[in-house]
Structure formats: C-alpha cells, structure tokens
Amino acid sequence: MRRIAGTALAAVIMMGTLGVSGSAVAAEPQAGTTVSVASQSASGDVEAQRRKCVSVKKWYNKRFNRMVKVKNACGYKVCFSVTMAASRDPEFAIGARKTGDFRYGGIAWTKGTGIKRVSC
Image (cartoon, rainbow, N blue to C red; front, side, top):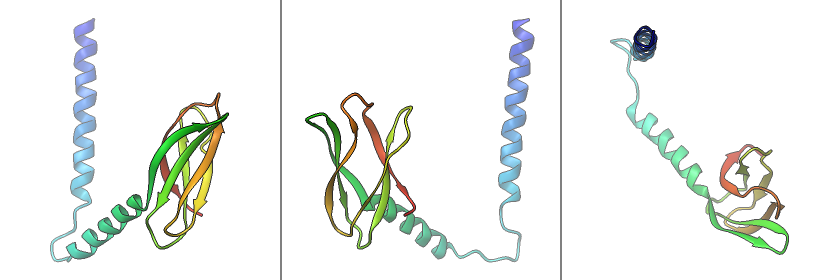
C-alpha cells in the first residue's frame, strides 16, 4: 500500500512540475518580438531600491510597550507595517529621510518579525 501511495505522490509531483515548466515556456516572447532588457533591469532596480528605503534599526521594549526604530532613506513619505505572527499588522508612515520610533504593541504581544511596505 505504501509503495502505491508513494508512486502516486511521485506522479502528481512530476505532473505539477511539468505543468509549471510548460506555463513558463508559454510566457516567453514569440520570435520577432523585442523585449527591452534595460527596462526590465531598471524596474527591478527600482523595486530593490524601494525595499531598501525603510529599514529597521532596532527592536526594543520601553516600559510596557514593544517599540521599533525605523529609518527612511528615501526622499518621500513611506508607509509600512510591522509583521507579527498570528496578529493583525499595525501600519505606520514615516516622512522623507527621517528616523522614528513606533509603538506596535504591548509587552504581552508577540515580537515583531520584520517590516513590509504598504500603500499609503
């Protein structure tokens, strides 16, 4: 019975792998069409820079609060949220080229695991 189940599982995995690679091939551009590689790499650089805009400097406790110190290296206002396990992520905004301290929960709350960009 285990051999049959293992074989069936392997077949499902192989079919899934072939399905994913088939869709990736279909997404490639047709012959005769031109794709600007420079524009793709430039958009990738912009996304990488946006991710680097907001960075965590320090996680700490202040009396009965969980705090995070965040630095914005960009020249515009950025909105972000503090990610926490099994909890709703609180959202904050920080001005251009500023460093700020934000209270994201009480001492009994779970610790933050990171930050992510959100739309303002």
